[in-house]
Length: 362
Image (tube, rainbow, N blue to C red; front, side, top):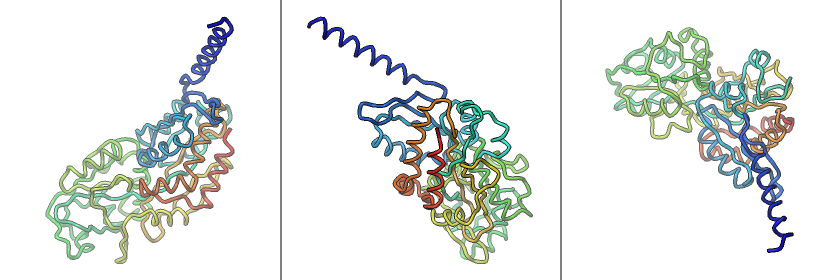
């Protein structure tokens, strides 16, 4: 080997070491760089809503086939943890079934965002929330708003209660105690579920919508969507709520009124979102939705958001987030989630607005 080639090898090794240094973890995940193929490279990490987990698994797998240089990780933990992690700068983005409130957006300082940058709520996942149950002999349970609110608030305590029987002619309802299973962690799914009960049966459900299950209402608690599903499945006389994508293997309540009962489907969820207005008062590129759950059909719906900075402290992180979310809200990404999670694809008009907000990220 001659001296010139040895020096060249040393220079190449030094450059490679420098590139590794650029990909070391920061509070928002490793910085990105241009890969030899011309695409982006680096890593971003998100956390939050467990409702998104099935979709996130699909999205990450498909996206990395297109952008092999980018690693995307998503840790669950619930919407509350996601919002907290994003605010602290521990994660580059978060998943949340509850948009950041206007007060929180004005009062909070988001550590990963550039000074004076807005945080944005970007809808990426729309899904029904299923009421799941495990009651011996009951195959097709039907509930209306008042009866559901009475069950989940503890006012109805037995499965053969006359109010349940009146809606379920032909079903053999056992004299079994009802066990309500709810989330133990701060959960956007809980807030969406309790908001639906509040909007449709406020005379029974008197607590305000919240990410935390009301202390006034008892029940069995379980962590995360998977915990609720497991507790319902393994219990007796149990009922709970979970994102429809994780309700497989459980009986699902049909909901309605005036004798018209429907199952939770992506189409039903999409109708509620399409019939709801945008929330006002936020930044121009914020896409939070004020869900109107009083419409006909199936109102137990969640819109799950990506929480992001409009301007990041690290411009490389911004490019990675933009690339990933652009795939997520694309027609391909939404179709992939529909197949794997049973979610409702974003309507084209909404997807276009969200993409415009993604484009604004820098």
